[in-house]
Image (cartoon, rainbow, N blue to C red; front, side):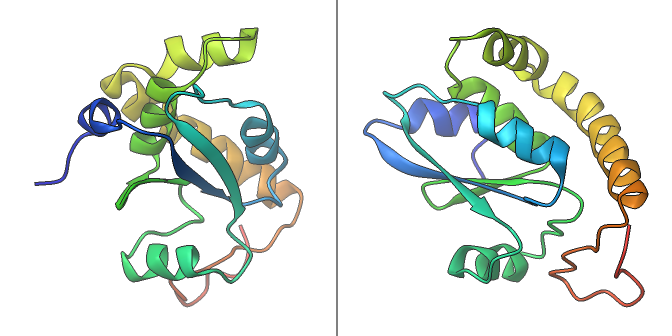
Amino acid sequence: MVPTPTAQVAMTQSKEDIYLVYDKQCPACDNYCQVVRIRESVGNLKIVNARDDTALMQEITAAGLDIDDGMVLKMGEQLYYGSDAIHALALISSRSGTFNRINYWLFKSRPVAHVLYPLLAAGRGLLLKLLRRSRINNLEKEGRDHF
């Protein structure tokens, strides 16, 4: 059984490295990832560019997660994807600063995160299409070179 983000956060006892994987070429994603903060008691947030060839990106690809459709949060051995990632981030986030308080209140509810995240992802897709950015296409799907 895969633990929910809520259960995983509750199980986190000691500081650990927590990885947030996203497309650094997306201005919206980059801004979000640069300002989101987690509580120091939870761990150390490490930001990973999904366009870099890393063992973590290989793990994400092996899990069948399309990084072009959602960010990934790795806590311990668990991968959280898309709306589950943003929900888990909200639960472990610092409440300091306006952005982090808004992020917490918007995404602390899993059902709300599941509704809002696809809207944000659609906006991201449109932005990247307008900017003529290429997809990462980590799953190597045919015909998915650009947004």
